[in-house]
Length: 367
Image 1 (tube, helix red, strand yellow):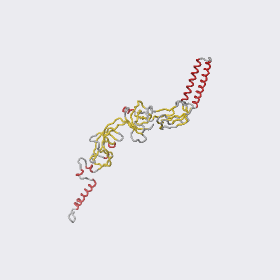
Image 2: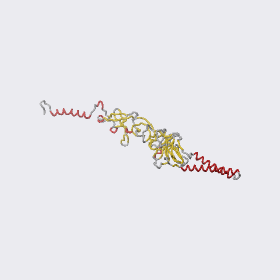
Image 3: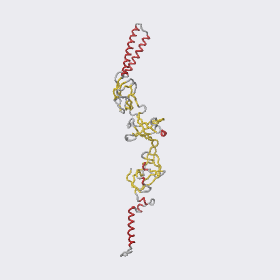
């Protein structure tokens, strides 16, 4: 059917619709000019989608394989001094608390003799007086030839024993109140007594830990001790408080028995510096069992794919897929082994789950 100008209406409709449909399709697909973006290596879908990603640099550096263990800061061998007194005493006053730092001359405790100790002193004084009096009497009798040499010798011996016993008690401080003072810099590890308590002769009063003489006791699973030996380096971190950096240490000894309380094997570590550790503090230890120079990437860059791993690098604005093997790893980074990977390459660490080989990408931020 033709209109009055002689134009077929069906043909006119086709001429109008075809360009219109083409324009709509062009707009929706975002088709790019082949002269600027066409790459015969990839399907055209790659030129119609851009993925936003975050990237980091592949770097070459040293990575450590570590064995993680937990433990406690304890006094080093020979660093503990037990304060005691050689006669039964009563605690009058306590001047220090557990964990307190002390220096030479710091008052620790005030002690007084117990009633039994005072009685012992009184008995010794009486015995001394009697022995002295008896010796004087025998000397007079001997002068009158009323006593034998043997009797005089026995009296002299008894007098000397009584004198020595009394002098010994007096040297120990028996008979007067005594204030015990610190003899060195250190930390009060334990206070065993309370004010008013009667402490037996030789009973522990305080435990003093020598200043700076600390070590760390870590607990390791028995199956892992074959990898550990004295001299290996350890990085220590307080568990319940932040640390500016790791505290370096060295394994002093690996126990050859299982701790019955923890069912773990004790590993003793000597820290290089003690100033950042607190006595009885809970710490995490990273024992370095291996170290090597390798290509390193953040852990988030490596993705599992079937029975292997992959990562994506960025080159010319497109993702490049690499099959890699994982080597040593830590909590934040991993060693990668693969072809065509170089230090300084940009590797995708966020958004890589959306990528395919050759897809266009847009980097938002480099870390």
